[in-house]
Length: 304
Image (cartoon, rainbow, N blue to C red; front, side, top):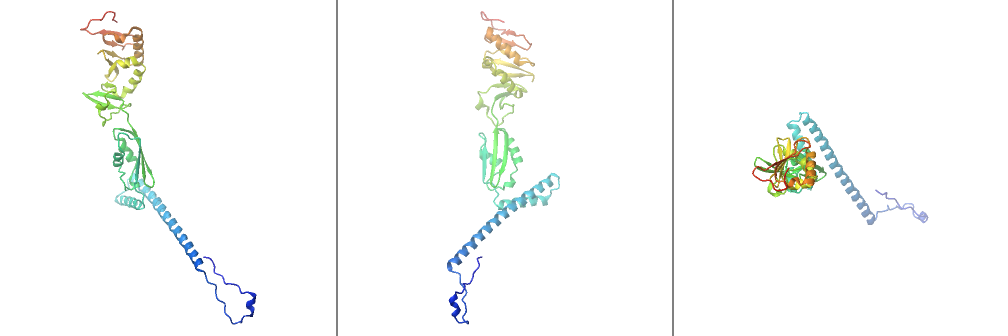
């Protein structure tokens, strides 16, 4: 507060009577207004600092308390009292404004953001501290369409969700039913096989786990892949390829890549895949055995 000073007497005042009194200087209305504004500004600034400090203290105390409660829970020492204290801190944070206002979802096409928010409990107004990122991630990865998920608390009011969905890769025929599988062989339970009828078909026990390897090998031999309708896993050990002609290619267990290269070379040289053969047996390394259809006659110029 500025000091109020008295006006100095001039030299001519010496002639005045010694008994005259001096009148104190008064503050002008403009000065009083400036002083009032200055005090008001200081008071508002102090209130803002106090509000920020209280919110920061509340958040810090809540984090410390929740951390302590988590440690106690891990040690098995958290009872009803601890649970009540945790609920109290959650309520205090919510009252301070730390509640879910937004849920940002990235990478989800088959699962809607509304489904994701509901599944992880991130409804508008839910306390931020009530969202457990690890539990939310596990809940999302339990969905058949979701391969990986990440959930982040973005303080003060935002939840971030990053989703990697499974890509349909093949149809697995098993026990007279079809299932959509991804490249790693995981069945996508919620996928409708009718929507993916153009995918390659694999058959047999254990086929999903080996499908990606077989498809990689077939991609090197488009002439064989283009004539193949079904890929059959035999005895969970080896593959057989069913052809458009109705014939079947028996691949070996040990070296299917070498057998496919051999078949591709023989077709380029002699048109083997055009033969009316029931079986093309490649199970013995370096050999190819063709078995004709029993009820069909061999066309002129065709043979093994």
